[in-house]
Amino acid sequence: MPSDQHPAGVLVFLYMELFDTIQTDGQPRSQAPLAERVRPTTLEAFVGQQHLLGEGKPLRALIESDSVPSIIFWGPPGCGKTTLARLIAHHARAEFFQLSAVSSGVKDVREVLERATANQRRLSKRTLLFIDEIHRFNKAQQDALLHSVEEGLITLIGATTENPSFEVISPLLSRSRVYVLEPLTRDDLSAILDNALATDVELSRQRITLEDRDHLLLLSGGDARVMLTGLEIAVTLAPAGEAHERVVTKKILEEAFQRKYTKYDKGGEEHYNVISAFIKSIRGSDPDAAVYWLARMLEGGEDPLFVARRMIILASEDIGNADPRALPLATSCFAAVDYIGMPEAAIVLSQAATYLASAPKSNASYMAIREAMSDVREKANEPVPLPLRNAPTGFMAGLGYGREYKYSHDYEGHFTEQDFLPPNLKGKTYYRPSDNGEERTIRARLNDWWKSRKR
Image (cartoon, rainbow, N blue to C red; front, side, top):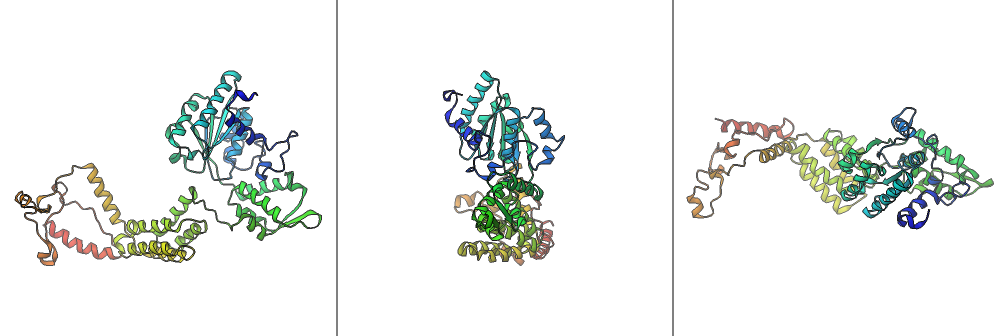
């Protein structure tokens, strides 16, 4: 294909991506990463996602009938999204373009669309555009795809680790099918590992002994690419013994991965899942679960100030006046974490989390402000009653500002029966203290006052 017939930047990227790892005899070049060398080239060789690719399952049926629509693959890293996109393009005999949403822009998309137009008009050939991390495309970039997807100029396959309901614009989402890819199971990873050791052009030449196979699978965190990359580094680190044998120990594996196992992506969905589990454990009064999820976050590299900030919110939202000490304690936790940093900040976070989890719970304050704000938005905002207005000038006093206001401290019990709500909300109750902790006392006191006001 002459180079002047296509946008140079895009197609160079495409052919480097697809074919630079292949020699003329069809064998992968040894310098390509292991994950690329053993990437499956047929549906039969693909491991995992049997709920989509098993016999008679929806995606397999679409691929085999050559009627694949635009698709959004939503799943964790290393579960096969890119490989599936390539297999679909190969099966459909479509020209395959791959863009990364991190480094590509509208210009790159338009160049692909120009090429797709030429394919359709001159060659009657289909074009498949795969966009990795499509959730990182902004609205303008996603909008640029709409018309072409709707008209069938391209088949779009987007891959995302984030919930597409939040990250992909509705018009594009409605023109695509969303398939949820599941994390690879231990058996899936084990099958991929066996295949790599047996068939890879480099590994199959060596005698490799894995002393702790389970630890390798654990370190991968369900990500096949991470597992294969870590394995390749570990084999390189392992000293060559007799007859080229390399023994990969647990210690070598941890050196290769540069970490112990913690499945936590602080920039992705797992970040939101684990913080949700943490907050719900505190709300549910389970300090043991709270500490566990806290440990998961900290071991995964989460910002300790983010955790402390969320506990400040929880202290008001879920505990409130049932234990008024919760909020100052959570605020002090944030300050202490900010002062000392990790790793000692973990001790402070643990103290705060266990205290909040063990505290009596009430969301009365939270519900009060929600209801009040709803009334402010939906009901007419009446003027402030004259007795409640300030009268800093004689003129304003002459208009009645502040007249008939009853100064509470002048009355027995420092309380008056005066109404403080606007007339259209007279008698309205927003704050309803629970019967937990300190709110039990507050509730009794307010009940006495409410009775006096309603006389």
